[in-house]
Length: 361
Image 1: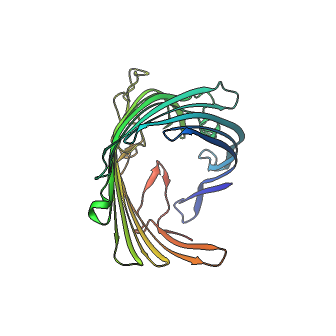
Image 2: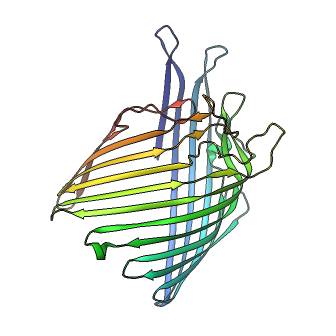
Image 3: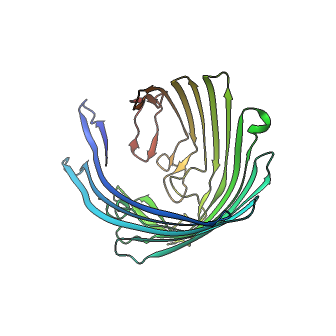
């Protein structure tokens, strides 16, 4: 069960705060999972998994009507059942090489089932360095969400599912045995060609609405590094860093002579992003600091650099302090977090300012 609220008020010029947006979202979800494995010999493993999910969503969005200054309440109340069934086989013919194949079948609502195959190869290049390479190819599919279909205003019940194919290849390493402390990381290249990508775009009516982008080419590099030190029996420091370069380009055809979206980065997807996390643990206490970076994002498919056509670069700093309490039959974790530590002004979606410094317990 989840409940989300978003409130946005603005001064009307006379000191009175007027409610511009009052959004409420309630979701009840039910999950059922079953699975099994069978290994006739050490090198061979068969598995099956089945999932059934039911989502009921009640969404209301009270906005201020500019024509008559009345509060207008819009929303939807919908439910959907989804299911998936997968069969996989993993084979390790030799100690340093493995191959796995997965065939997944997905269905939602009254739509036809969709088959989604995938194959993955793993190989150990150097045991001493913990050097492992991995490559995979998979078909992929993403159904439109209930918000995509029915959100009011803006939902599009005529949306098609995203379909495509993804390739990726990467290498990872673990030097912990050589260095005496935790040192690991990896580098991964991925490439996806997606048909009917679902993208929310601003409309001339003043709200966003999702559309299917005919062809999208998404690719990039993801890298990560993890370091760990044990200063003493009770004092540990863990540090993790990651960086992603993810161009996502509209490779479709112009929908009109005025369409400037082809060949441009998709709206709201940053080309560069990174994060650094440090965690210091002493006995039952833990202190964590996280820094995130997101590059400029465009709000229009044309990629125009105007005042409202882009969302500026922003950095986010979060800290937290945790205490673990251990009892005879119970472990309890208490955590106090300070989000947006330096009170940054930022937006994730155009015209939806996000909270300044805020606290979580």
